[in-house]
Image (cartoon, rainbow, N blue to C red; front, side, top):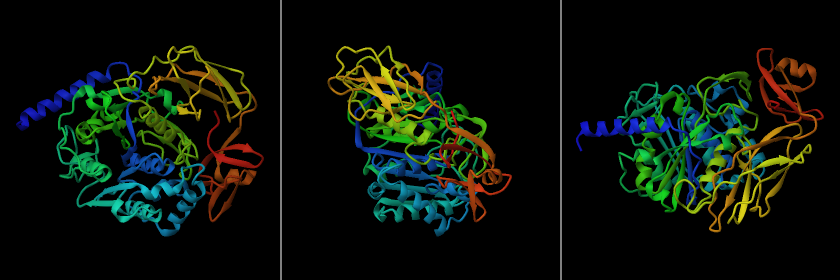
Length: 500
């Protein structure tokens, strides 16, 4: 096909996507996924998030791709500027981050031993001044320190490339390879998505340069996000026709960077990065979770109080000090989406024989730490799953039509949805959400300068930094210019966070 026809076909596909985006979002499909073939990658803040997911959920992700990101928990201990702008990240900083990985292994995170089996793909441009080669070198060192062998740890530095996602084709509106500007996707004569997938999955079939617009599905993210103000109401998923028909497929999570969400650049990251071209012919489903702009100034782990006007993923602690752990709001939301997609046995939109979603979901019997969730029976269901704020809470399928959810915080509002399982194990779409509030007294939060926190006895200082009493979380510099919100969760025990 000549270049003119190729361009017309690309424009037609874009128009189809624009029309699709104007319709109501559907439920996220449950599909037949090879759970040994789930991987994740991202650019910039999406690369930091991919890295966090790869460590926090190391038993889920067999492959991790980092396009211009930085090491795990860098901004958990240092101002974010020390983790980008081509800053040198030394051995002492990496040692502090490693302590987190060691301390959280098998508890707040999956066992760290799982990281050694991962396949890791790293890429950065030599002219990237936004993140840069030095932070990426620290990412490589961190993976090597955690047992990823040389054959599974690929590092690519492309001469002359700026802060961008590299492709080998010219997408509509893309910027020059040596320029860091919207949409941060460039024809660098380097097929980033293809190289990534080959690292993870080996030899691939030839790609399809014109994936069908009907394979792009806009879905409702709200059952999974727990109301996180940094995540959009909808996300996207690309489902190749064979995967929709029930073929067992692999699953990749592609995470956009700052200023790259659908609300900002439309379908560019979804369509013009090359992920779906390779996915279409290689039995790969691609999940594209989406952020949204959040202009509220919030306390961060070590960077003071900041807003998120560029729709970045949380790699600095906007939404809690546990942002890099399994319990981190955005990390847990993405994992919940992955779990749902991977819960079916095939079939478009519901997982091959999936039953209708449960109805009549309600809450009752609130205590300070528990809630009863009940629903109407679904004919033919072999069991049910209960999701709190997008994350499944039952270990085994529930055979009754009620469930008592425990381990909740006092005076806190939660949201629950319920799915049902068919006799073949296919999971339905989630029910409508039901909310409930636990009894008791809510944790108290105090927002003040780090200097005031120390003076009031909520924190202590060491080496010019303030640390929360009890949790010992790094709050940033000990002065009157850094503001932090501390939540008291026990006697003289404080964590960085916000109260409901």
